[in-house]
Length: 442
Image 1: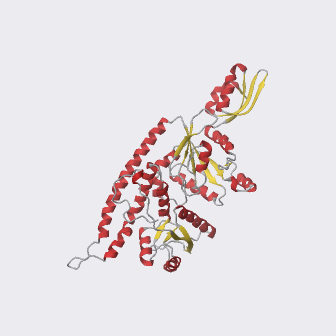
Image 2: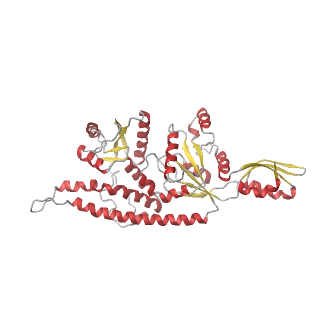
C-alpha cells in the first residue's frame, strides 16, 4: 500500500501503458482507526469505518480490526492520544498487522510522529484512495490525472519518506565535529525539484486534453449531453450499459470506473443525444484529487442534464445524495438540471419503495441490473431534457407522413384512424413542436 520511497521520482515524464509501473505493496493486513467527534453518532462512525474497510478491500488489504477514540479534535502532533496509540501498537504487534489506516488525511508531521514514536506503520484514507485510482486508471488521461494527485500528495511528505536513510547511517559530522545535512536531507531537495517539474509537465498535458475536449464540445453544440453522476458503486456503469449496450466494465468495487466513457443514446426524439459515464464520488474526497480530475469532471459541468444515480439499498443513501451534491457544488455544477435515479430496487421490498417514492416523488425508481422500469426512466429523461409536453394532434390524411414522423420524434400515447383524419395523443419536445403546430387541438 505504501509507495516505494523513490517511486517514479527519478524517471522521465513518460506515462505510456508499457512504462506505467504498478505500485509494489507490502501491506497485506491492517487495523482501521478513527476519531469519534462529539456531534457524531456511533452508527455514523461505524458506517464511515465500513466504507473505509471497503476501500481497503478494493486496495487488496485484509482488515483485522477497527478502533475508535472519542475526542473533539485530533491531537496536533500525533492525531490520536498517546495512551490510545500505545495500546494500538501493542494490539497490532499481537495481531501482526502490517499497517494502521486512519480514516482522515494526516498531515506529514502526524504520520512521521506516529511511526517514529510508536513504531506503527501508518497510512491515511487519501493514500488508500490514491492506490485504488492508480490501479484502475486505464487511459492516458486517467493516468495523468492520478499521477498528478499522487505527486501533489507526496510532495509535502518527502521528509518522512527519506528520513530512515539518515537513521540507518547515523548523523554525519565533519572533522571539526559540526553536524552536516544527511543524505536524505539533500535528496529531499532534489526530489522536490523533480516532482515540481513533473507536476508542471502533467498540468500542461492535462491543459492540452481540456483544450481538445473544449474543441470537441463546440463541434457538438447541437448535441444534448447527459452525464451519470453519483456516489461510487451506486450502479452508474450498470445503468450506462443498460441504456447503451456499451459493455463498460462493471465490478462490485469502489471506483471501478475512472475514465469517462460516452455513447450515443437513442431516444424517440430526432435530436442527437450523448450520455457519459463518469468517476464516482465519495465522502471526504481530497480537494487535490478533485482538482486533478478537472478534465474528466468537465464532462459533468458541460452537461444539459445530470442523472444522479443512488444505491437505494444502502441505508445511508440520503447522506450520499448530500455528499454528491456537495461535490457538484464544489466543481460549479450545482445549477445543472438533475434527475434523481434511485437504483437497485431489486434489493429492497415493495413497502420500502412506496415510502421512498413518497419522499422523492420526482425521482425514478429502477433496477439497472434487471432493467426494471428503465423505460420509465427514458420517458422521464426525455421530458426533463426536451421539456416534453402532452399534446393532442389531429392530422388530415394528406398529412399522414407527419404521423410517421411523430412516431420517430415523440412518445405516442394514443393513435386513432377516424373517418376524416388521424387523431394522436403525444408527448412532444418544444423544439419539435413546429412540425405539427397547425394541427394541435386546444
